[in-house]
Length: 497
Image (cartoon, rainbow, N blue to C red):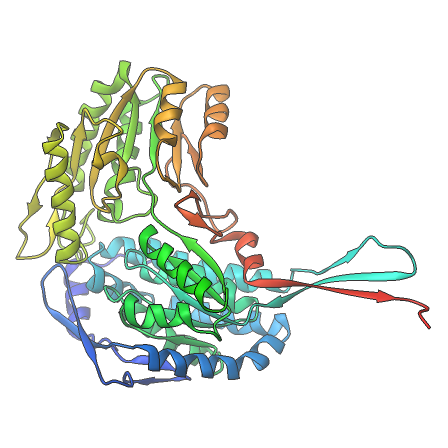
Protein backbone atom coordinates (compact mmCIF):
# COMPACT_ATOMS: atom_id res chain seq x y z
CA UNK A 1 0.00 0.00 0.00
CA UNK A 2 1.07 3.59 -0.65
CA UNK A 3 2.49 5.31 2.41
CA UNK A 4 0.99 8.69 3.29
CA UNK A 5 1.88 11.33 5.83
CA UNK A 6 -0.25 12.41 8.79
CA UNK A 7 -1.63 15.36 6.84
CA UNK A 8 -3.11 13.04 4.20
CA UNK A 9 -5.05 11.02 6.76
CA UNK A 10 -6.21 14.10 8.65
CA UNK A 11 -7.55 15.64 5.43
CA UNK A 12 -9.24 12.38 4.46
CA UNK A 13 -10.85 12.07 7.87
CA UNK A 14 -12.26 15.58 7.70
CA UNK A 15 -14.22 14.66 4.58
CA UNK A 16 -15.40 11.28 5.85
CA UNK A 17 -19.07 10.84 6.68
CA UNK A 18 -19.43 7.33 8.14
CA UNK A 19 -22.66 5.45 7.62
CA UNK A 20 -24.35 4.46 10.87
CA UNK A 21 -27.55 2.81 9.69
CA UNK A 22 -28.12 -0.93 9.62
CA UNK A 23 -27.85 -2.78 6.31
CA UNK A 24 -30.86 -5.04 5.78
CA UNK A 25 -32.01 -6.68 2.54
CA UNK A 26 -29.72 -4.69 0.29
CA UNK A 27 -30.22 -1.20 1.72
CA UNK A 28 -29.38 1.01 4.65
CA UNK A 29 -32.17 1.59 7.14
CA UNK A 30 -32.77 2.83 10.66
CA UNK A 31 -33.42 0.42 13.51
CA UNK A 32 -37.11 -0.39 13.84
CA UNK A 33 -37.12 1.27 17.25
CA UNK A 34 -35.41 4.38 15.93
CA UNK A 35 -32.80 4.09 18.69
CA UNK A 36 -29.17 5.14 18.18
CA UNK A 37 -25.88 5.14 20.02
CA UNK A 38 -22.91 7.41 19.39
CA UNK A 39 -19.58 6.32 17.95
CA UNK A 40 -16.59 8.38 19.09
CA UNK A 41 -12.93 8.55 18.11
CA UNK A 42 -10.98 7.32 21.17
CA UNK A 43 -7.94 9.38 20.17
CA UNK A 44 -9.82 12.69 20.25
CA UNK A 45 -13.29 12.12 21.64
CA UNK A 46 -14.76 13.48 18.39
CA UNK A 47 -18.20 12.27 17.36
CA UNK A 48 -18.02 10.00 14.31
CA UNK A 49 -21.59 8.85 13.72
CA UNK A 50 -24.92 8.04 15.29
CA UNK A 51 -25.28 4.28 14.87
CA UNK A 52 -28.53 2.36 14.66
CA UNK A 53 -29.13 0.37 17.84
CA UNK A 54 -30.74 -2.79 16.52
CA UNK A 55 -32.71 -5.18 18.69
CA UNK A 56 -34.97 -8.23 18.47
CA UNK A 57 -37.26 -6.69 15.86
CA UNK A 58 -34.38 -5.95 13.49
CA UNK A 59 -32.94 -9.42 14.06
CA UNK A 60 -36.24 -11.06 13.09
CA UNK A 61 -36.49 -8.90 9.99
CA UNK A 62 -32.94 -9.69 8.89
CA UNK A 63 -33.36 -13.42 9.54
CA UNK A 64 -36.52 -13.47 7.40
CA UNK A 65 -34.67 -11.80 4.51
CA UNK A 66 -31.68 -14.12 4.95
CA UNK A 67 -34.00 -17.13 4.83
CA UNK A 68 -35.65 -15.82 1.66
CA UNK A 69 -32.29 -15.23 -0.03
CA UNK A 70 -30.86 -18.62 1.00
CA UNK A 71 -32.24 -20.95 -1.71
CA UNK A 72 -30.91 -18.83 -4.56
CA UNK A 73 -27.48 -18.21 -2.99
CA UNK A 74 -27.01 -21.82 -1.86
CA UNK A 75 -28.16 -23.03 -5.27
CA UNK A 76 -25.58 -21.07 -7.23
CA UNK A 77 -22.74 -23.07 -8.72
CA UNK A 78 -19.64 -22.73 -6.52
CA UNK A 79 -17.87 -21.09 -9.45
CA UNK A 80 -20.52 -18.35 -9.50
CA UNK A 81 -20.23 -17.67 -5.76
CA UNK A 82 -16.48 -17.59 -6.32
CA UNK A 83 -16.85 -14.96 -9.05
CA UNK A 84 -18.97 -12.69 -6.85
CA UNK A 85 -16.72 -13.07 -3.81
CA UNK A 86 -13.63 -12.25 -5.87
CA UNK A 87 -15.38 -9.10 -7.05
CA UNK A 88 -16.18 -8.37 -3.40
CA UNK A 89 -12.47 -8.70 -2.56
CA UNK A 90 -11.66 -6.28 -5.38
CA UNK A 91 -14.08 -3.75 -3.92
CA UNK A 92 -12.41 -4.05 -0.52
CA UNK A 93 -9.01 -3.43 -2.10
CA UNK A 94 -10.35 -0.50 -4.13
CA UNK A 95 -11.68 1.15 -0.97
CA UNK A 96 -8.73 0.18 1.22
CA UNK A 97 -7.88 3.69 2.41
CA UNK A 98 -11.47 4.48 3.36
CA UNK A 99 -11.90 1.20 5.24
CA UNK A 100 -8.54 1.54 7.00
CA UNK A 101 -9.43 5.06 8.07
CA UNK A 102 -12.76 3.87 9.49
CA UNK A 103 -10.91 1.19 11.49
CA UNK A 104 -8.46 3.69 12.92
CA UNK A 105 -10.98 6.41 13.74
CA UNK A 106 -13.44 3.97 15.27
CA UNK A 107 -11.18 1.91 17.57
CA UNK A 108 -7.87 3.73 17.74
CA UNK A 109 -5.40 1.39 16.04
CA UNK A 110 -2.46 2.93 14.12
CA UNK A 111 -3.31 3.72 10.51
CA UNK A 112 -0.18 1.92 9.31
CA UNK A 113 -1.53 -1.31 10.80
CA UNK A 114 -5.06 -0.78 9.48
CA UNK A 115 -3.83 -0.14 5.96
CA UNK A 116 -0.89 -2.52 5.69
CA UNK A 117 -1.99 -5.44 7.86
CA UNK A 118 -5.74 -5.57 8.44
CA UNK A 119 -6.95 -4.58 4.97
CA UNK A 120 -4.70 -6.95 3.00
CA UNK A 121 -5.61 -9.75 5.42
CA UNK A 122 -9.33 -9.11 4.96
CA UNK A 123 -9.09 -9.09 1.18
CA UNK A 124 -6.84 -12.15 1.23
CA UNK A 125 -9.40 -14.03 3.33
CA UNK A 126 -12.19 -13.24 0.86
CA UNK A 127 -10.04 -14.28 -2.10
CA UNK A 128 -8.74 -17.45 -0.47
CA UNK A 129 -12.17 -18.78 0.43
CA UNK A 130 -13.56 -17.78 -2.95
CA UNK A 131 -10.80 -19.64 -4.75
CA UNK A 132 -11.19 -22.69 -2.51
CA UNK A 133 -14.91 -23.29 -2.79
CA UNK A 134 -14.96 -24.78 -6.30
CA UNK A 135 -12.19 -27.19 -5.28
CA UNK A 136 -14.00 -28.83 -2.36
CA UNK A 137 -15.32 -32.25 -3.35
CA UNK A 138 -17.78 -34.69 -1.84
CA UNK A 139 -16.95 -38.35 -1.21
CA UNK A 140 -17.98 -41.81 -2.35
CA UNK A 141 -17.86 -44.31 0.48
CA UNK A 142 -16.20 -47.72 -0.03
CA UNK A 143 -19.29 -49.94 -0.24
CA UNK A 144 -20.33 -53.24 -1.79
CA UNK A 145 -21.01 -53.21 -5.53
CA UNK A 146 -24.75 -53.38 -4.85
CA UNK A 147 -24.82 -49.97 -3.18
CA UNK A 148 -23.47 -46.44 -3.51
CA UNK A 149 -22.74 -44.23 -0.54
CA UNK A 150 -22.57 -40.52 -1.41
CA UNK A 151 -21.23 -38.03 1.15
CA UNK A 152 -22.03 -34.46 0.17
CA UNK A 153 -21.72 -31.06 1.82
CA UNK A 154 -24.61 -28.61 2.09
CA UNK A 155 -24.77 -25.11 3.58
CA UNK A 156 -25.80 -24.75 7.21
CA UNK A 157 -28.36 -22.08 6.32
CA UNK A 158 -28.55 -18.71 8.04
CA UNK A 159 -25.34 -17.86 9.93
CA UNK A 160 -25.11 -15.13 12.56
CA UNK A 161 -21.56 -13.80 13.01
CA UNK A 162 -20.72 -11.73 16.09
CA UNK A 163 -17.27 -10.17 15.86
CA UNK A 164 -15.04 -8.15 18.24
CA UNK A 165 -13.84 -4.57 18.21
CA UNK A 166 -10.07 -5.09 18.09
CA UNK A 167 -9.75 -6.28 14.45
CA UNK A 168 -13.22 -5.36 13.18
CA UNK A 169 -12.80 -5.85 9.45
CA UNK A 170 -10.36 -8.76 9.46
CA UNK A 171 -12.36 -10.75 12.00
CA UNK A 172 -15.55 -10.06 10.08
CA UNK A 173 -13.99 -11.48 6.93
CA UNK A 174 -12.70 -14.52 8.83
CA UNK A 175 -16.37 -15.33 9.52
CA UNK A 176 -18.27 -14.14 6.48
CA UNK A 177 -15.84 -15.33 3.77
CA UNK A 178 -16.05 -19.10 4.45
CA UNK A 179 -19.73 -18.87 5.40
CA UNK A 180 -20.67 -17.10 2.17
CA UNK A 181 -18.40 -19.27 0.04
CA UNK A 182 -20.07 -22.40 1.42
CA UNK A 183 -23.49 -21.09 0.35
CA UNK A 184 -24.84 -19.68 3.61
CA UNK A 185 -26.48 -16.31 4.09
CA UNK A 186 -24.89 -14.21 6.85
CA UNK A 187 -26.07 -11.66 9.39
CA UNK A 188 -23.06 -9.82 10.82
CA UNK A 189 -23.21 -8.10 14.20
CA UNK A 190 -20.14 -5.92 14.72
CA UNK A 191 -19.16 -4.73 18.16
CA UNK A 192 -20.90 -1.55 19.28
CA UNK A 193 -17.39 -0.22 19.94
CA UNK A 194 -16.31 -0.44 16.28
CA UNK A 195 -19.23 -0.94 13.85
CA UNK A 196 -18.35 1.50 11.08
CA UNK A 197 -16.14 -0.61 8.79
CA UNK A 198 -18.64 -3.49 8.84
CA UNK A 199 -21.45 -1.16 7.77
CA UNK A 200 -19.37 0.08 4.84
CA UNK A 201 -18.38 -3.49 3.99
CA UNK A 202 -22.03 -4.47 3.53
CA UNK A 203 -22.59 -1.86 0.85
CA UNK A 204 -19.42 -2.93 -0.97
CA UNK A 205 -20.64 -6.54 -0.98
CA UNK A 206 -23.96 -5.48 -2.46
CA UNK A 207 -22.21 -3.31 -5.04
CA UNK A 208 -20.05 -6.32 -5.95
CA UNK A 209 -23.19 -8.23 -6.86
CA UNK A 210 -24.11 -10.23 -3.76
CA UNK A 211 -27.92 -10.46 -3.80
CA UNK A 212 -30.04 -8.64 -1.22
CA UNK A 213 -30.34 -10.59 2.02
CA UNK A 214 -27.13 -12.59 1.51
CA UNK A 215 -25.00 -10.34 3.75
CA UNK A 216 -26.68 -8.04 6.26
CA UNK A 217 -25.19 -5.99 9.09
CA UNK A 218 -26.96 -5.24 12.38
CA UNK A 219 -25.08 -2.86 14.70
CA UNK A 220 -26.14 -2.86 18.31
CA UNK A 221 -25.44 -4.25 21.75
CA UNK A 222 -24.76 -7.83 22.70
CA UNK A 223 -27.56 -8.03 25.25
CA UNK A 224 -30.12 -6.88 22.67
CA UNK A 225 -29.49 -7.81 19.05
CA UNK A 226 -26.67 -10.23 19.86
CA UNK A 227 -28.85 -12.20 22.23
CA UNK A 228 -31.74 -12.07 19.74
CA UNK A 229 -29.62 -13.64 16.99
CA UNK A 230 -28.20 -16.31 19.31
CA UNK A 231 -31.70 -17.19 20.49
CA UNK A 232 -33.47 -17.06 17.13
CA UNK A 233 -35.09 -20.33 16.11
CA UNK A 234 -34.39 -19.74 12.42
CA UNK A 235 -30.65 -19.02 12.73
CA UNK A 236 -28.77 -22.23 11.96
CA UNK A 237 -25.28 -21.36 13.20
CA UNK A 238 -23.57 -18.79 15.37
CA UNK A 239 -19.92 -17.79 14.88
CA UNK A 240 -18.41 -15.62 17.61
CA UNK A 241 -15.11 -14.03 18.56
CA UNK A 242 -14.89 -12.26 21.91
CA UNK A 243 -14.59 -12.85 25.62
CA UNK A 244 -15.05 -16.25 27.24
CA UNK A 245 -17.84 -14.93 29.45
CA UNK A 246 -19.90 -13.74 26.51
CA UNK A 247 -19.10 -16.92 24.58
CA UNK A 248 -20.59 -18.99 27.41
CA UNK A 249 -23.77 -16.89 27.38
CA UNK A 250 -24.16 -17.21 23.62
CA UNK A 251 -23.66 -20.97 23.79
CA UNK A 252 -26.36 -21.11 26.45
CA UNK A 253 -28.77 -19.12 24.26
CA UNK A 254 -28.03 -21.39 21.32
CA UNK A 255 -28.75 -24.48 23.39
CA UNK A 256 -31.93 -23.07 24.86
CA UNK A 257 -33.30 -22.23 21.40
CA UNK A 258 -32.82 -24.56 18.44
CA UNK A 259 -29.45 -26.11 19.36
CA UNK A 260 -27.84 -24.13 16.56
CA UNK A 261 -24.24 -24.95 15.75
CA UNK A 262 -21.80 -22.64 17.54
CA UNK A 263 -18.20 -21.70 16.83
CA UNK A 264 -16.62 -19.82 19.74
CA UNK A 265 -13.21 -18.14 19.61
CA UNK A 266 -12.81 -16.71 23.09
CA UNK A 267 -10.24 -15.29 25.47
CA UNK A 268 -6.58 -16.04 25.94
CA UNK A 269 -3.68 -15.64 28.36
CA UNK A 270 -0.94 -16.90 26.10
CA UNK A 271 2.42 -18.10 27.39
CA UNK A 272 5.50 -16.91 25.50
CA UNK A 273 8.25 -19.28 26.72
CA UNK A 274 11.92 -18.31 26.38
CA UNK A 275 14.63 -20.85 27.16
CA UNK A 276 18.22 -19.90 27.92
CA UNK A 277 19.34 -21.19 24.52
CA UNK A 278 16.90 -18.96 22.64
CA UNK A 279 19.71 -17.36 20.66
CA UNK A 280 19.85 -13.62 19.96
CA UNK A 281 18.27 -12.20 23.12
CA UNK A 282 17.88 -8.74 21.66
CA UNK A 283 15.80 -10.14 18.81
CA UNK A 284 13.76 -12.25 21.23
CA UNK A 285 13.15 -9.17 23.41
CA UNK A 286 12.06 -7.16 20.40
CA UNK A 287 9.61 -9.90 19.40
CA UNK A 288 8.34 -10.30 22.97
CA UNK A 289 7.61 -6.57 23.09
CA UNK A 290 5.74 -6.74 19.82
CA UNK A 291 3.80 -9.78 21.03
CA UNK A 292 2.24 -7.75 23.85
CA UNK A 293 2.26 -4.15 22.61
CA UNK A 294 1.00 -4.62 19.03
CA UNK A 295 -2.50 -3.18 18.57
CA UNK A 296 -2.21 -1.66 22.06
CA UNK A 297 -2.22 -5.17 23.49
CA UNK A 298 -5.84 -5.53 22.39
CA UNK A 299 -5.14 -8.92 20.83
CA UNK A 300 -6.68 -12.25 21.84
CA UNK A 301 -3.40 -14.12 21.28
CA UNK A 302 -1.20 -11.42 22.86
CA UNK A 303 1.92 -12.88 24.50
CA UNK A 304 0.82 -11.50 27.84
CA UNK A 305 2.63 -14.09 30.01
CA UNK A 306 6.36 -14.11 29.30
CA UNK A 307 7.91 -17.20 30.86
CA UNK A 308 11.71 -16.85 30.98
CA UNK A 309 14.37 -19.26 32.17
CA UNK A 310 15.76 -17.65 35.32
CA UNK A 311 19.38 -17.72 34.17
CA UNK A 312 18.61 -15.13 31.47
CA UNK A 313 15.53 -13.43 32.91
CA UNK A 314 17.18 -10.24 34.14
CA UNK A 315 19.01 -9.75 30.84
CA UNK A 316 15.88 -10.29 28.79
CA UNK A 317 13.68 -8.05 30.91
CA UNK A 318 16.21 -5.21 30.64
CA UNK A 319 16.13 -5.54 26.85
CA UNK A 320 12.32 -5.63 26.75
CA UNK A 321 12.15 -2.48 28.86
CA UNK A 322 14.51 -0.88 26.35
CA UNK A 323 12.37 -1.95 23.39
CA UNK A 324 9.19 -0.78 25.12
CA UNK A 325 10.35 2.79 24.49
CA UNK A 326 9.70 2.24 20.78
CA UNK A 327 6.06 1.39 21.55
CA UNK A 328 5.05 4.65 23.17
CA UNK A 329 1.51 5.55 22.02
CA UNK A 330 0.87 8.33 19.55
CA UNK A 331 -1.71 9.80 17.19
CA UNK A 332 -3.26 6.82 15.38
CA UNK A 333 -3.41 8.83 12.15
CA UNK A 334 0.35 9.30 12.20
CA UNK A 335 1.94 6.44 10.21
CA UNK A 336 4.94 6.65 12.55
CA UNK A 337 2.89 5.69 15.63
CA UNK A 338 3.55 2.15 16.84
CA UNK A 339 0.68 2.14 19.34
CA UNK A 340 -2.57 4.05 19.12
CA UNK A 341 -5.45 4.77 21.46
CA UNK A 342 -7.35 2.37 23.72
CA UNK A 343 -10.81 1.67 22.30
CA UNK A 344 -12.85 3.40 25.03
CA UNK A 345 -12.77 4.69 28.61
CA UNK A 346 -14.17 1.44 30.02
CA UNK A 347 -11.29 -0.51 28.55
CA UNK A 348 -8.74 2.06 29.72
CA UNK A 349 -10.10 1.91 33.26
CA UNK A 350 -9.95 -1.88 33.18
CA UNK A 351 -6.29 -1.84 32.19
CA UNK A 352 -5.50 0.61 34.98
CA UNK A 353 -7.37 -1.62 37.43
CA UNK A 354 -5.27 -4.65 36.47
CA UNK A 355 -2.09 -2.62 36.96
CA UNK A 356 -3.22 -1.46 40.41
CA UNK A 357 -4.07 -5.03 41.42
CA UNK A 358 -0.66 -6.30 40.24
CA UNK A 359 1.12 -3.68 42.33
CA UNK A 360 -0.96 -4.59 45.35
CA UNK A 361 -0.16 -8.30 44.92
CA UNK A 362 3.58 -7.61 44.85
CA UNK A 363 4.54 -7.63 41.17
CA UNK A 364 7.48 -5.34 40.31
CA UNK A 365 6.71 -2.57 37.82
CA UNK A 366 9.61 -2.08 35.43
CA UNK A 367 8.16 0.48 33.02
CA UNK A 368 4.87 2.19 32.19
CA UNK A 369 1.87 1.47 34.35
CA UNK A 370 -0.21 4.55 33.71
CA UNK A 371 -2.36 6.34 31.14
CA UNK A 372 -0.67 8.77 28.77
CA UNK A 373 -2.22 12.18 28.12
CA UNK A 374 -2.14 13.00 24.40
CA UNK A 375 -4.63 15.71 23.48
CA UNK A 376 -7.22 14.26 25.83
CA UNK A 377 -7.28 10.87 24.10
CA UNK A 378 -7.40 7.41 25.66
CA UNK A 379 -3.84 6.09 25.76
CA UNK A 380 -1.88 3.75 28.02
CA UNK A 381 1.88 3.36 28.29
CA UNK A 382 3.58 0.07 27.37
CA UNK A 383 3.88 -1.68 30.71
CA UNK A 384 6.18 -4.45 31.99
CA UNK A 385 5.84 -6.28 35.32
CA UNK A 386 8.54 -8.59 36.67
CA UNK A 387 8.42 -10.98 39.65
CA UNK A 388 4.93 -12.16 38.70
CA UNK A 389 3.69 -15.50 39.95
CA UNK A 390 1.13 -17.56 38.09
CA UNK A 391 -1.44 -17.25 40.89
CA UNK A 392 -1.60 -13.46 40.55
CA UNK A 393 -4.59 -11.98 38.76
CA UNK A 394 -2.25 -10.43 36.20
CA UNK A 395 -1.16 -13.92 35.13
CA UNK A 396 -4.65 -15.43 35.09
CA UNK A 397 -6.99 -12.75 33.76
CA UNK A 398 -7.08 -11.32 30.26
CA UNK A 399 -6.09 -7.63 30.47
CA UNK A 400 -6.51 -6.87 26.77
CA UNK A 401 -4.06 -4.03 27.00
CA UNK A 402 -0.30 -3.35 26.73
CA UNK A 403 0.66 -5.03 30.01
CA UNK A 404 3.28 -7.79 30.18
CA UNK A 405 3.63 -10.24 33.08
CA UNK A 406 7.11 -11.81 33.38
CA UNK A 407 7.39 -15.15 35.20
CA UNK A 408 10.64 -17.06 35.82
CA UNK A 409 11.19 -20.81 35.56
CA UNK A 410 14.09 -23.26 35.99
CA UNK A 411 13.18 -26.26 33.85
CA UNK A 412 11.12 -27.27 30.84
CA UNK A 413 8.76 -29.21 33.08
CA UNK A 414 8.16 -26.13 35.22
CA UNK A 415 7.61 -23.93 32.14
CA UNK A 416 5.03 -26.32 30.70
CA UNK A 417 3.27 -26.64 34.05
CA UNK A 418 3.01 -22.86 34.40
CA UNK A 419 1.89 -22.39 30.80
CA UNK A 420 -0.83 -25.04 31.09
CA UNK A 421 -2.01 -23.77 34.48
CA UNK A 422 -4.59 -21.51 32.85
CA UNK A 423 -8.25 -21.77 31.89
CA UNK A 424 -7.22 -20.61 28.43
CA UNK A 425 -5.38 -22.32 25.58
CA UNK A 426 -5.48 -20.04 22.57
CA UNK A 427 -1.79 -19.61 21.73
CA UNK A 428 1.73 -20.15 23.03
CA UNK A 429 5.30 -19.73 21.82
CA UNK A 430 8.60 -21.50 22.42
CA UNK A 431 12.01 -19.90 21.89
CA UNK A 432 14.97 -22.30 21.75
CA UNK A 433 17.68 -23.38 19.33
CA UNK A 434 17.27 -26.99 20.48
CA UNK A 435 14.94 -28.73 18.00
CA UNK A 436 14.14 -31.58 20.36
CA UNK A 437 13.17 -29.17 23.15
CA UNK A 438 11.12 -27.05 20.74
CA UNK A 439 9.03 -29.93 19.42
CA UNK A 440 8.69 -31.71 22.76
CA UNK A 441 7.55 -28.54 24.51
CA UNK A 442 5.18 -27.60 21.70
CA UNK A 443 3.55 -31.04 21.90
CA UNK A 444 3.03 -30.76 25.66
CA UNK A 445 1.42 -27.31 25.56
CA UNK A 446 -2.38 -27.22 25.84
CA UNK A 447 -2.84 -24.67 23.11
CA UNK A 448 -4.52 -24.48 19.74
CA UNK A 449 -1.51 -22.69 18.25
CA UNK A 450 2.17 -22.91 19.13
CA UNK A 451 4.74 -20.61 17.54
CA UNK A 452 8.36 -21.75 17.55
CA UNK A 453 11.02 -19.00 17.37
CA UNK A 454 8.38 -16.48 16.29
CA UNK A 455 5.19 -15.02 17.67
CA UNK A 456 1.81 -14.98 15.86
CA UNK A 457 3.11 -16.62 12.70
CA UNK A 458 0.68 -18.12 10.20
CA UNK A 459 -1.48 -17.32 7.20
CA UNK A 460 -4.76 -18.39 5.61
CA UNK A 461 -3.50 -21.95 5.10
CA UNK A 462 -3.52 -22.84 8.82
CA UNK A 463 -6.40 -22.88 11.33
CA UNK A 464 -6.79 -20.33 14.13
CA UNK A 465 -8.48 -21.29 17.39
CA UNK A 466 -7.96 -22.59 20.89
CA UNK A 467 -8.25 -25.27 23.54
CA UNK A 468 -10.13 -25.22 26.85
CA UNK A 469 -12.03 -22.00 27.61
CA UNK A 470 -10.48 -20.28 24.62
CA UNK A 471 -13.33 -21.81 22.67
CA UNK A 472 -14.04 -24.29 19.90
CA UNK A 473 -14.16 -24.24 16.14
CA UNK A 474 -11.52 -22.74 13.89
CA UNK A 475 -11.10 -19.67 11.71
CA UNK A 476 -9.02 -19.76 8.51
CA UNK A 477 -7.94 -22.70 6.33
CA UNK A 478 -10.04 -25.46 4.81
CA UNK A 479 -10.98 -26.53 8.33
CA UNK A 480 -12.94 -23.30 8.74
CA UNK A 481 -14.58 -23.66 5.35
CA UNK A 482 -15.72 -27.18 6.24
CA UNK A 483 -17.34 -25.98 9.46
CA UNK A 484 -19.80 -23.80 7.54
CA UNK A 485 -21.30 -26.83 5.83
CA UNK A 486 -23.05 -29.97 7.03
CA UNK A 487 -22.60 -33.53 5.81
CA UNK A 488 -25.34 -35.50 4.11
CA UNK A 489 -25.17 -39.22 3.43
CA UNK A 490 -27.17 -40.57 0.49
CA UNK A 491 -27.27 -44.39 0.36
CA UNK A 492 -28.37 -45.95 -2.92
CA UNK A 493 -29.20 -49.66 -3.38
CA UNK A 494 -28.96 -51.20 -6.82
CA UNK A 495 -31.32 -53.90 -8.08
CA UNK A 496 -33.82 -53.49 -5.26
CA UNK A 497 -37.26 -54.76 -6.34
